[in-house]
Length: 439
Ligand code: ADP
Ligand code: MG
Image (cartoon, rainbow, N blue to C red; front, side, top):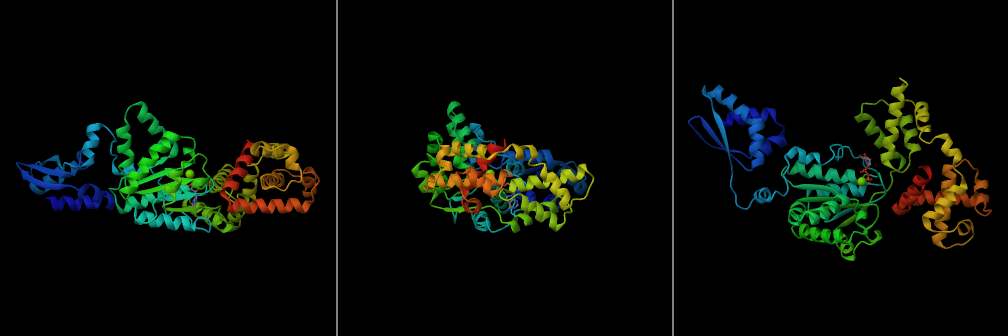
């Protein structure tokens, strides 16, 4: 009867679920029409009772003509962490699929487009996913917003779960970690907190730049890190910059992060942006001509999240107008991204003032001739933004910067464009200033 049952379950369950539920269960005896089945945990017991037991009754009746009643007993194993966990009401171990639900289903290796800026990060992620804890530990991704750090992190989680359905994986942002930690102190549940964080095979902590200034949290994370590391568990971290550039990050954390591999992700080149759009369009079943994809990719040049946003916008615009997606439709749709009024209201002075505020400079220096780096870069950023965000001519912009030549403005623009592609910090600063200006 068990063989028969196995076969019918195999037909209705996917590979991983079959492995998770059926293979883990063991028929012990069939006496007086009671089929005793041993399962590894209460979680398994619940799942069997809720979802799988019906089949037993059905198949049992078919084979024996009798009503078979399944009874589940939990395999006792004195060192299962699960038991301890239950006793202390610590973590509820989640069922397999909701464990997966903590990861975004869309963020897999399959949906990730490999390009120049993320090649290395992608390769490292794959290695770590296939062989967690054994190679690059910790794996540290850094780079500007919207470039795929979170996506890769989740992809590692998915892949590891595909290989090891029982792996314990925890994804959190650094803020969640900090909040959990603070709550655990307030509620006196430090032990539970530790169980939760130190008892995983893969810990993913996103955006650790927000650990800056949080002394206690850093201290706790240091211990979490050590425990996991010493147990050979994989740790993956992300940040918008290198560890040693995160203000007030403890030296000992910085040095531990350096034990593994740090890889940066830089903004995608045009080709990669087109490839991402194409993939996205395909997965949404959208028909978009190549030249239109190129056009959209040309409009949004640094951030993949914005690139996706642009596509959504174009799609919505096409639907609203019941029109196919074409380049001119895309141009119309994206024009409204930057309302004309905003573009007109933006002035060189506003930009200069914002840049001064951001870098704590005075306007005279910004427009002046000093050649120290702390002034030159902000000056070039202000010129770059003046070119990007206003309709002023190059000579006019030069004039507004203490009478500089238009070639200086061109040079500044090129310089900053290049820095945005190579330096995630500059990229972030420019985008922060831009966001403030446009908000
Ligand atoms: P980050 O964490 O670096 O800020 P995310 O991982 O959140 O960026 O990525 C932003 C969006 O861009 C997500 O929707 C993600 O799926 C998408 N994305 C990023 N990189 C890629 C890529 N290489 N291929 C496909 N989609 C990507
Ligand atoms: Mg992210």
